Length: 328
Image: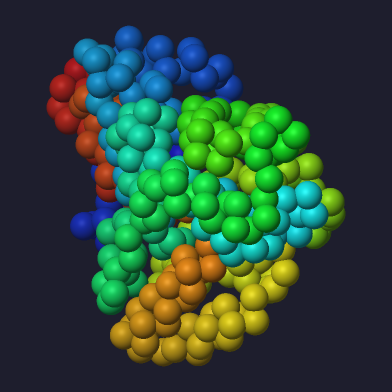
């Protein structure tokens, strides 16, 4: 796709700052990464850099790494409808949260390009106001307490039990780290299934249609909120609301009542208060396995001035220096 600038655009402060933008989706990923890191003139910007690729970008003579704090959450969707594991019991869901070492997850699986989650509101600049009152802290890593709660919930351990975990292929490092923590803390086996793109689409459709039984107990899933005014509403509704596309369990009437109050709130202050109350409920009930908020990573030519946005991919404020290959 070739985009040509409109030189007559009314807002001169807004742009245009580039004469032309060419968007390409015909390059294999490895080739595109090589072109932005090791050469000039073919690829100036590559989206969706994986944490494992960050070091290559940072060591490049041609590219720089740009990180954006999106309104993004990585959570484990817990199947509260499961019959072989008592995940309907809040104690079992809390055990899962206490079993995971989020600091190690961030450092090892995301190379530091993420922040631990305390609930479903990520610690991003766009959600700063919504997290202001009575900020929550992430579940601590407490394997002993996790094991005790797991037993109290009536969950077994040993070779006869396997906790089934599913995750998209690109989340393999995170899924492996989570599985290892759960095995170590709870004394059980885990079975990890990595989903290819077609399987991811089928899994998401089955979730939205409430298809049961589910082939997993915990599904690792990422979501980037698009709501600008009240991102917490999109996240809480999506993962736990009555019509949430990611809800895997019975409806939670109190949560839906609080969501209704958030929708009806007009003033920003009331929206902030309502969002915080919802997040406290979601955390207390452990309605998900709260993991982390990964950053969005880009590989960008060193002579390109790219401003990353929290909720979308924009190029309106992007420009190039006089040393850029197109101007030499």
